[in-house]
Length: 275
Image (cartoon, rainbow, N blue to C red; front, side, top):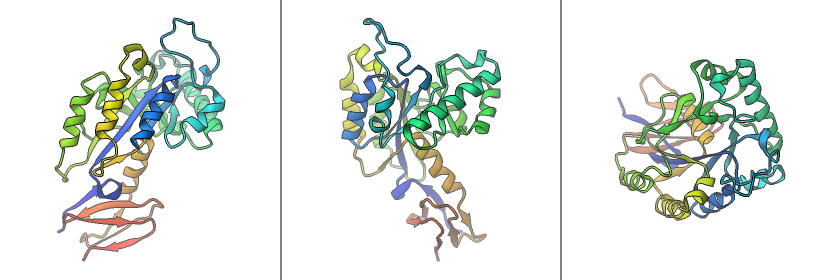
């Protein structure tokens, strides 16, 4: 029997994804840095708060990105839900939570022109009941707060914990990630935070140094949160023969696998024989 492993696109075994909340002014500079190093991010927005409140001069968070600029600014990245008004949802009636997510989806989809299918829990707040509800309202993953301090793939996409916040030993984890070379594993480096924190902490140089270090690497796939979810679903949907001698890909999207250390590209609708 052959040894068959799922790979990331291009036959890679490492992926980097970034996740930032609230849609504040700092996203402009953050996206500029991401684009410079071909890194992709997911940006979780509260559509009900956009242009609703003008921040005070002393407000360290800064203004939210205006509606008319969202589609173009986040082009090439992912816009995702963060609920309509950012309540602590574990304290809310379930009907309110459902409306917070659905109305946020509707508004964001009207702005970006594609289905919005992700979420980060506002204030890190959630319950098992909320997790179990999300797929009914079209949400396919949600990020929690905290740091896993590892590069493991998530066991539960509705309780998706990042590797680290950007203020939590970011460059140390970057060096560890770069050094990973065991191709029998899949590794994911997931960074989260808020772009206003860079202005608050005066450490934009940290993100610049990080992206320069980990960006544009041939062994790494750079993806948004939903791209990772979608791709892993394609891999799970591959149909292998009983003896492992061929595989059929019923999906539209291409999948990549390793068979006895040989990389195969399995295009949508294609059957590939290994022997």
